[in-house]
Image (cartoon, rainbow over all chains, first blue to last red; front, side, top):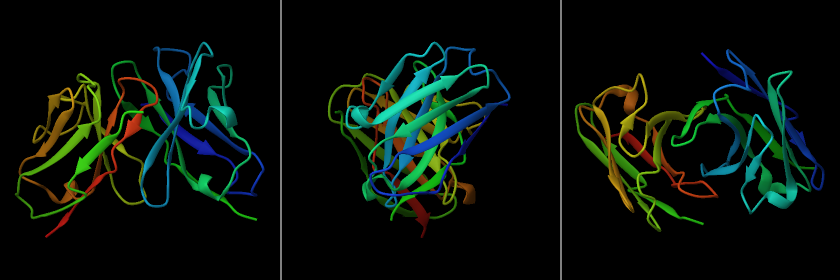
Length: 119
Length: 107
């Protein structure tokens, strides 16, 4: 059973960079043609897709965030990462990593990590 | 972006009831729709893909239907474990977007 686990700072200062890592266990991040995703949930409950990356390195991201984000993957260490630049209070959310597949939804999710942007 | 609109936003029901949640897309998404269940403090749980295909382990009293712009999630014989918030999500094009959620609470 594949499991995903987010890690990273819970507090980031405005204008700085948010960096999160998603460690994948129970299966290789390189196999199966999955896309490895970041999704966030705002305090009032709304969900926003941030972007995803394939094992080969191709990425797709939400146009509203493309200029500020970098998604990378490390197949040797079975994890993928998110960097979000120039954060503001509006980026405060629970950040989830998840696994998706073509023609389907996100079938496995991490437990989520709360990131608060505040000085 | 494709807007996903769910109704109602809140639904009160009792154990044993049948509930139906509607999700409308702002444009034709064929059957590229997923449904999730989320409980407080937990990650969303994947229920349905392709508008009507149940993920493994999801009970058969849960069903999905629809295509194009209108979709429904139906839960028959509501059980205590079903009281939660439900979200739809399209994957027809980028960006992927979610509905605003429907909270099913106890009447």
